[in-house]
Structure formats: C-alpha cells, structure tokens
Length: 128
Image (cartoon, rainbow, N blue to C red; front, side, top):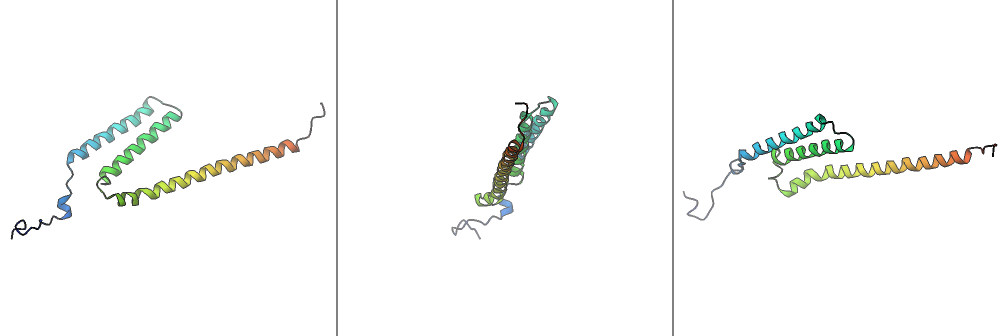
C-alpha cells in the first residue's frame, strides 16, 4: 500500500528522524581541545591575579556549555525542556549570590558595631 497515494505521510520513528552529522561532533571536539589548550596556556605563561581566575573560569564555562549543548543534545531539545534543566541552577546561583552579599553586609555591620564599642570603651590618654 502506497501511503503517498492516499494523502498520508509515512510514519518515521524517532530513532530514524534524528541524524546529526558527525562533522558537528568533530568540530566541537576540536574546539574543546583548543579551549583546553588555552586554559593550560594560562598556567604555562603564569598569568596571575584576577585575570588568571577569570580566564580559567571562562574557559571552564565555555567547555561545559559546549558539552551540554552538543553532546547532551540540548541544542536540539524543545525550549521548555531547556528551561526545565537550566532555570533551577540559575536560581540556585542567584540565591547563593544574594546570601553572599547579605553575609558580607552582616560582617561589615558587626565590624562597625564592635569598632564603635572599642572606641567608646578606650580610656583617654592621660598625657593630653
């Protein structure tokens, strides 16, 4: 029976429908290799300070993003599934950042309070 003759399209199973070219995977693998080499170059050239940590973390996030996007097939997933997977960690990091800011503020306020008590409690020098 010919499905095209009666107006119906042939049914394609999902395993047969998703075919990603191997070239995409090879290109991403090469890009991951280049990003890793750049990450190692940060250590090799002895970059120091905040620039070092910024570069290392940037390369780490880029590599993780590429792995998630391509090798875990996130690029080809529905947007609702992407949001379902990515929104909770983003919210968690946001709450951690808010907690960190609050902790810094609390630490600062305690320092001001205890410093004020030290200044008030300190006896005046008799030499003046």
